[in-house]
Length: 121
Image (cartoon, rainbow, N blue to C red; front, side):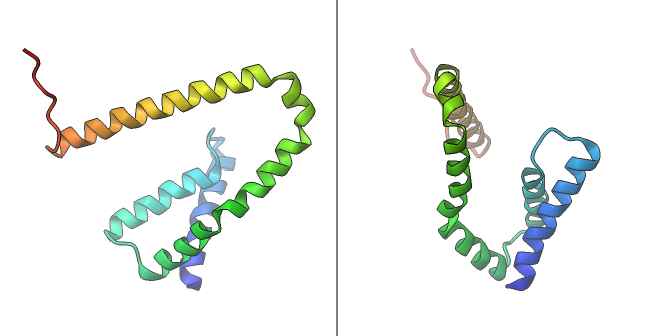
């Protein structure tokens, strides 16, 4: 278990160090996630300890939204004045995410040979 937690933290630390050193415009934990993905792809399996640790973290994921909620409440006056652009950004980003997800899904299905579009006559 300790090795699995250490692996997660090392990937996050590596991501943070690279982001700060190179000035990459993405969050360090996101880059660390790609490092973990690469390591798991190289292993071709998820170690049992890492699976267990990830399961525990995911079961308590809602706790990680508490600081974000506190941050929102801290800036409620600003949100009150800029609600329209925030709402527009929320809807546009949600629609784009759904569209891109659908396109990637169909692309993967075609690549796997599981989907063929119907021919219209």
